[in-house]
Image 1 (tube, helix red, strand yellow):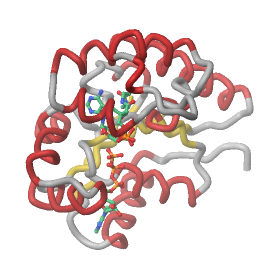
Image 2: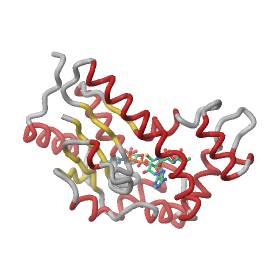
Image 3: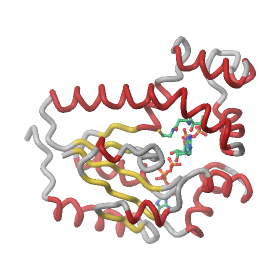
Image 4: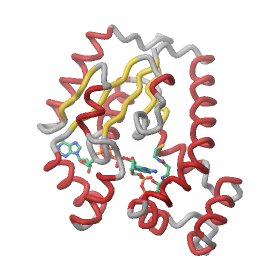
Length: 201
Ligand SMILES: CC(C)(COP(=O)(O)OP(=O)(O)OC[C@H]1O[C@@H](n2cnc3c(N)ncnc32)[C@H](O)[C@@H]1O)[C@@H](O)C(=O)NCCC(=O)NCCS
Ligand SMILES: Nc1ncnc2c1ncn2[C@@H]1O[C@H](COP(=O)(O)OP(=O)(O)OP(=O)(O)O)[C@@H](O)[C@H]1O
């Protein structure tokens, strides 16, 4: 079974993904893949520099994530241009990792994809698990974690589909507003319900 783990920015996907990893499930992390495909020497990074200018490449040849973030979270047209260049590369690498894990005999694979709904990738997965959070907690956690002011944090939240739309498309929802233990308890209950097998035991 391929489980798609998604939610909104700072809703707690990485937190839940870590819990799943501790339980022994293999994880494909789209945010990590997004970093891989822009490493120095990658064609995608050259395309991004052509889009936004050499200014977004740091002296050591890596992408200036803060600069690109500032551009794309404040301007839908830039966001679309970046997505058009980077998403095909991310999709290709995620599918490669998925095949590799299936070949290794894993029965359950977690694909942590923040933009699963925005990019219409529902067909990549068998079940969709959404990590939800109230807007108040989301804003507070995002500002704290990324050191953003309220305006910057709101711009990032607004760059994604509303939480309610994602909940509607979910097979199960984790409400991540309480303690970490409460979140873990909800996760375990969902895995029991779905009768998820680890495989390779
Ligand atoms: C814009 C970038 C450079 C900012 O990097 P930064 O290190 O500050 O953030 P990070 O990569 O950890 O992403 C944090 C979160 O931002 C949100 N986010 C990232 N990219 C996008 C996007 N194009 N549209 C909407 N939300 C996004 C996601 O919820 C993600 O989990 C980076 O997010 C990026 O390369 N984005 C494009 C690739 C992408 O769409 N990634 C999302 C998963 S496929
Ligand atoms: N139940 C919780 N109680 C308190 N803080 C939490 C809880 N869950 C997550 N957090 C904190 O909120 C922040 C966002 O969580 P996390 O990084 O897991 O979100 P995410 O959905 O993976 O974010 P992104 O989309 O930006 O990658 C982190 O600093 C995390 O430690």
